[in-house]
Image (cartoon, rainbow, N blue to C red; front, side, top):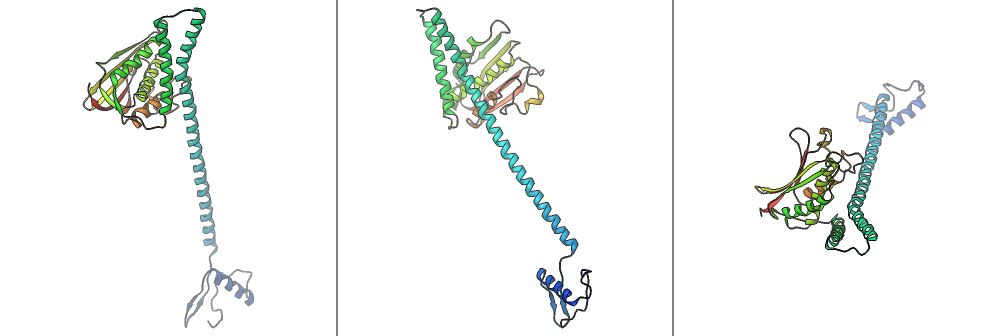
Length: 305
């Protein structure tokens, strides 16, 4: 009171009774916290205790750690996204090489045949060359569609399945480990709205997956086209080894494959075409005994014929 110190607690020991140093310390307290003035009673000068300072340091340290963790998580997420994008680009490059490889190899074979047999002509040769040229044109159209909205036009799924099956049949193994490809469809329908180029690509990817599953063992692939309620449906069933249970949850993810050296892009691409671009559904069903596999492509039905 009246400038006199009446009570003193927690003062640093080195201050002792030195009034000048004590008043300097009190001035420092007033810088940290405004003194409490009670008229007629006195003034209380107070500061931050040692324990409180330690807690403040701990809080600052925790904040720094959390900031570092947040930065690390952000870096990890960006790295993961970049890696996924790189894998997708690699997969698409491989898919394009695969799509172009088959007709190019066929054309190369026919060119070699013509060189060995000059003057050879005939409608069968012309048909084969035309089929491979049309195949190259379709591949170019497919990659032209990537990243663009899918077209919407009536597509007869029966006719589409017939085109795809007709393309694969002469290219299946017939001697060692033969593969049989059968189609069950009644006419050109049922009809769905979609992009025929992309839908053909999706069905090809699913059938190619079944052919790969039968590689080295042979077997049978059944393609069926039907309609139920408001759904147009394509199904591809094979009697191969099936999909291991531990892979089924990630079966349609890019880069996931059960085949040694597999690229893991076909089924991922097929699901994107069916579900994201056509509002349909692509599902996997295991065989009744665990062996074999069935993939079902479903679309909103426009017409049953």
